[in-house]
Length: 185
Length: 286
Image (tube, rainbow over all chains, first blue to last red; front, side, top):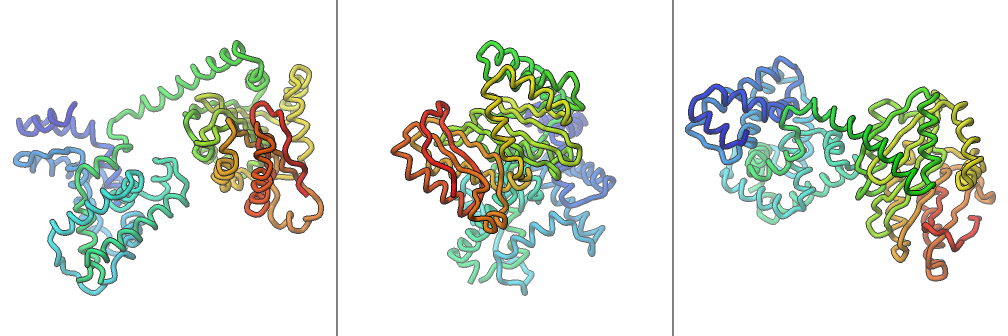
């Protein structure tokens, strides 16, 4: 079923919308959640919450990209759940991948968010769009979806060293770009 | 103002939907698990049958390869076929794909290379065909990986049955005879599959760098020399680099340079050939 048809079902408040969402994007959402949570019950619960989140928010929302919309809900719920159930335990991929990225920053003291969403959004999207497609996709898979390097290698048929060096170079470029734009002084 | 951790996290969360969609392109979104298992399996069977038929009708070159598969089906402990898109893929990609198949079956730890043969386009390093012969040290099984057009076939045989198969082939196929002799010649030297995989990318790069003027490049690696061994026995040639190209004189220096490069960097015994094999350019490595 096309995304527009599924969204129409949400607007009609038809429960079939959930079934169709599960059928089309269940695996995708589960994959996003699995990068944060290990327990199957937690994953299942989070997945159900994702469908509920979509049900509660559409309408009024009418996402232009249903898949990205669902991934965002799934990721936020998984992150909340992760923080709730394991303040001490570390999930390897989500935390490790973000720690990798932290080498791009120098301010480890302040915690407040001082830049607006639009500023940050504009910067990161401009930066990513200036990269080659393959580099961009690998970067997003690692730092947004928190996929493991092994999974990325498998998906794109690249060697581990190539993926790692690609990520390293992109982080360096990001660091340079942050510096150029005054975020890294 | 320096960006902090939370702002960095917030920034990553602001990535546009279209970029997320682009990256998720290869995620399985539909429940097609059943089909994804069945379709490749069915395609493998069809391709195996059709490749045997094509080889028989087209020419005799592949007959010995296919006959070994047929032989394998008679008395082999296991015979497995994997379908991969060999065409339009470079050597490195193919080696990785094969390695993944091996790893999934916990096979790669004890695999030793007996011979390697790739034919690739020099500019793109895309594979035209290839054969890898391996031996599983833990089970004494011989494993042959054949890459023909769009499929890769992996067949496993125990050692005794392979010997029978080889002797039959020697009677009927001269080229196979020569190849086997070369392998026999180098049985003292060994190379693990893992080691081969590590340097697979280099094969393509070296060949690409030095053989751009040829129509085809064939890379054959028979043995590998551990660097320590090579240094310790420098005076005694433990292997050879031989090269054939279609423009022998023109490429003479390049071949020598390639050999030196290989000597310095990889210490593999390899040879580069063109399909006609009309000109021998280099000599034994000293």
